[in-house]
Image (cartoon, rainbow, N blue to C red; front, side, top):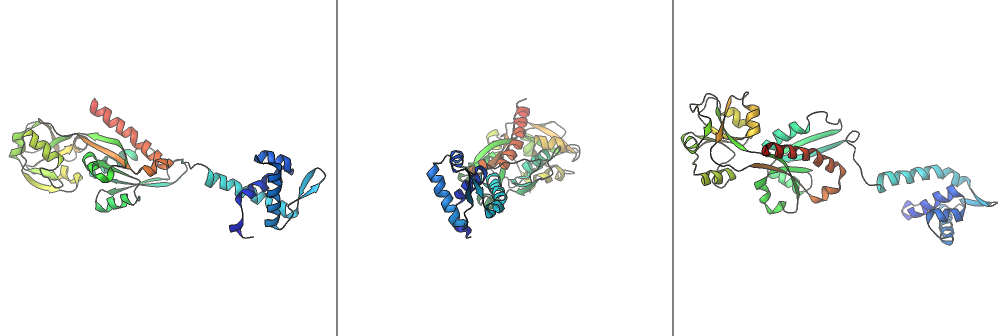
Length: 307
């Protein structure tokens, strides 16, 4: 038999007929008329080249061929209903999934630690990729499940149609080496102008930080830059440089990296990181689970900052 010519609807009719062994009862179960059910049986007999059901008193008796196919037929229909027609589900306790997340340095440091804290299901894996040109290309090709990006990046038109939710909030503080010649606790405009700035990535007046410093009347003299946020706390040791760090990262590393935290006396922009994903992923139950893991993180961050 050529499967390409088999009508799957007829297989459903056949399974009910083999169960009921009566055309009238089968028609009732199938919500079909009796003539339509009889016509379907005639087509099945032609496709299988077998009577399939023969009269035996008031019922129909399956032929040897029908008896041989009834259980495999039921299994095929159950598999089709369970695996193809049923709405997809996701159980992290039993299913396996690798989630690919594109992030900047700060989100990578913070999110990975929070995502894997506690008992992560054995089948769940998180792959964090750097936020760069190659990562953006992969995001456009739907090869990345979700990106965690700073707020200013989302001003780009390519993210206009994407879904988003806040997952991290923080603020910037000043930081110096514990043996720094400046012994105060405040980061003033004068201090920033007196000591070289260790900048994250390429500092300029066009960055969020640069614009905020201009508004505050603070002038920074860049002494060094690093494209890796995690390097900044350790690069301060034995220098007279000053840098800006997310507060939670600075406090977490203060003792280990010999930092002294300085409270800015001028206003700096808040740090907000957003989870961003393509709307087409909304219907993916595994993706919904991932977003649910990130959502409480955002709520904790917002609550902590408000307090």
